[in-house]
Length: 111
Image (tube, rainbow, N blue to C red; front, side, top):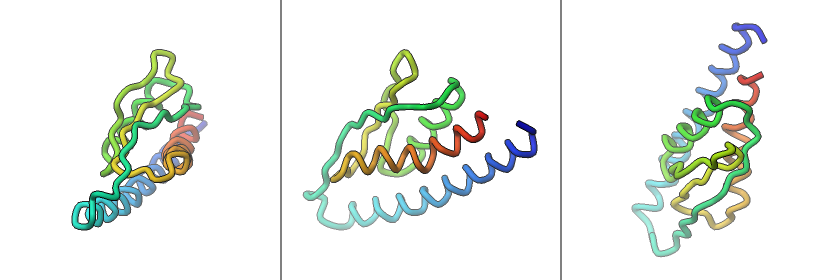
């Protein structure tokens, strides 16, 4: 893959991250200012399809930098990322969101 394509895909990842940062910040603000007794925190296992340590590290950083989520651990074989989520009423939807927003773009950069 050419360097130009990687740069373009990296810019796309950056824009997706900024969008998720804004959306998550608003959601966390609503949760903090609202009724927090309805929150359903969870620790989720996100199966990974990434091929490099750099890709897994990038994903873990994107997750940790997004309000309401924190990367906790990556399995030794790099196949699973464990994530703490502030509110996960539908855990499968949260896992799918992480995979479809960040992981998909990182896989494109990996080539």
